[in-house]
Length: 114
Image 1 (cartoon, rainbow, N blue to C red):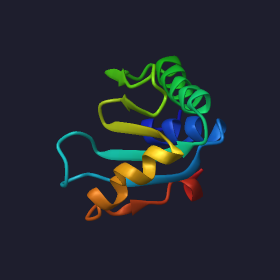
Image 2 (spheres, one colour):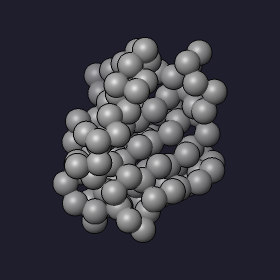
Image 3 (spheres, helix red, strand yellow):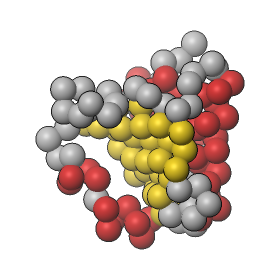
Image 4 (spheres, rainbow, N blue to C red):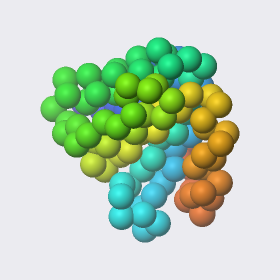
């Protein structure tokens, strides 16, 4: 069984999310241990990616605490407790620039662990 981080990463990747970044938030934020940040080019694809994360997490028995922003499809936050997935519309991602905001968080290379 994959870890929650691996499962969430695989879910966003399977729906063709772009520029997937994983930040190690341990010791930096009390919100979560890891953030997954990615984007898509349309509201519909942003929603499909977020839905896949929720579906896969629930299927494997992980808790989905909440999902915010689904209706607009511009920035959807999926809170899986230890992992928070941020799915942006491409235009919103550049505006909010979470990677810079959390610039002190080290990057994790989950793709090569698959």
